[in-house]
Image (cartoon, rainbow, N blue to C red; front, side):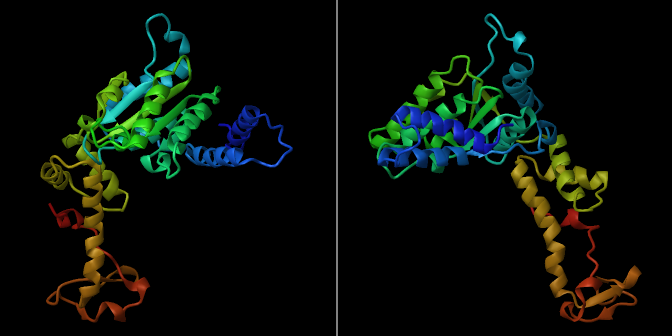
Length: 325
């Protein structure tokens, strides 16, 4: 993938052409403003990671649609001819914590795309007219990436494109208008716009109509919940029986992936909190000590602060029973 410096150099050249500057004079106030927007746009580019769609648990239908929208047009462009066109504008919607943003990051890494990750905080500016110019510069910058797929992720887009009402501020209307204009201007550009929202009913109907596919990202089913809990608990060295995992998956119905991560984190942290209150310890192999009850045979009475940090042995065996629901 081209370096960030290359992206900046290319865009700076376009800006100099726009203002008739060959690079030798002192920057004008307009140039400085353009440079500030360039800096913001460039900061939105995220380097590809090693997280792919295969790393995302469940959501097989959603992952297939993302592959069709991003991967296939790049790897097999000859398949998209005639009336078969790749989707360029997709909306991922669903409850909070179900992995919408994570999926966007995963498909960008898998496709080695130039990835712009945008939030409302990145777009909104206190300078009059700057926000819509930033939107324009963002898509202009994206169109210059011709050798790779490009993904523009606009996270929680409802904060930018809510339904119109009488109290809507003028700058919000201008941002929305510019976004609509940019999304409509795609020709054969190698750009996919992915937007996410937890509340699609809040979106402006005109903006909602621009999406070629609206993809629901739902809560994990029982099998996916087992896999998610297994990933979080198993990576910490916790052995969980099939019966315990079945119990946990039953108790966590309607939990999101984010909820399950918090449950696993709480289960792993509770034994740590209990160490400080432990008053009796049982000798274990290697000179280690593990907490136990006062009436346990061979228990040694001492406080947690009396022990060397290297002596403490944390027991994980009952971690799955420590989850709170």
